Image (cartoon, rainbow, N blue to C red):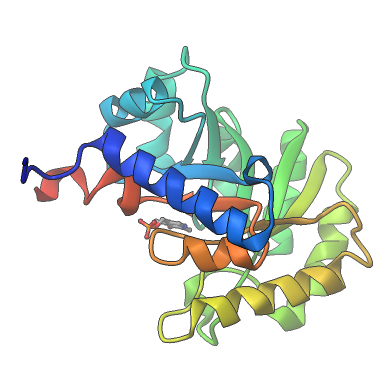
Length: 227
Ligand SMILES: *Cc1c(COP(=O)(O)O)cnc(C)c1O
């Protein structure tokens, strides 16, 4: 028997099988769930390997790191999702490679996206904590932001993105997101996507209806320079 650490292929297979299992428990079709492999901290070579293993969706949270990787891998059939806090002056450059921005958190960012003038899918990030520095819009400010996105003709609101707070049962946190989503659907009936669930809590996210999982370390391992 080998005691070697699992390979990338083995970790990916294990996560895929856990997602399929959670979907089956939830009575959901696994094809309705997009798994975004979060590749921050990892080099383009790892993303190339993921691509060879059938991964199509990757997520990055910093433009400075993502841009050179996206440029190097432009010939691969990958969809790049932007999931980090974003300065308005970087939006145009991010949209050179990213097909959606999952971290829309303020009206000025929506204006910056709209100013680029090309079609963009957007997720509004909902902040589930009381700490404004965590990123995302508070529930109290959500309705106004939804209106801003709906008024931007080139921006398509896909749904909500959220990170479960430390110290809260993730299932309960994701249930909160689902309820907010149900309320938001009254004004934005097609914005039904839910991007929630990371390495430690994707099972709970699937059970609460996640349509997009953002999974990093469970698949990629720790950051490349740490081991
Ligand atoms: C890093 C990151 C993830 C992935 O986190 P893991 O715990 O490594 O799976 C998901 N979402 C966002 C917004 C992130 O920044």
